[in-house]
Amino acid sequence: MCVGRDRNLAEEVLQTAYLRMLSGSATSSGRSSVRTWAFGVIRMTALEELRKQRRSAARIDGTDAPIDAADPTPGPDVLTERAERAAALSAALAKLSERQREVLQLVFYHGMTIEEAAQVMNVSLGSARTHYKRGKAALAIGIAHLREVS
Image (cartoon, rainbow, N blue to C red):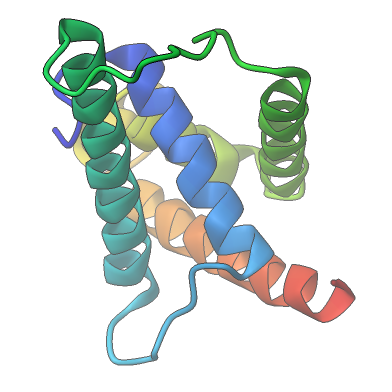
C-alpha cells in the first residue's frame, strides 16, 4: 500500500490523483498502458502526500519549526478545492456504467483485488476484469474530454 493503512489519506490521494488525471495535469506519454499510467499517477501522488506529511511532522516536532507557525486548519480555498475535486471525481464516476463504477470503487476505495471484487459483485472474474478495464478506459476518455473543454 502506498500510504500504509491510513484510509483517509488513501481517499485523499485517490481523489487528488483522479483529479490530476481528469484535469490533464497528469498526462500519459503513451509508452505504457492506461492501467500502468493510472497506478503511476496514484503512486506518485501518494509519495508526494507522504513527503508533505513528513515535512509537516518535522516542523511540528521542532526540527524545522518556523518562527510563526501557521494555522494548520485548511483555509476556505483548500476546502473549496477539495470539494471541487470530489465533485469532479463524482461526476466522472457517475458517467460510468454501474458495474464499471462498482468494480473500480471496490478495487480503489476498498483495496480489493479484481478477483475479490468479482466475488462481491457475484460476477465471473472475466466479467469483472472487462468492467474494470472498460471503466478505466472510460475515465481516460473523460480525462481527454475535460482537457478539450478546459
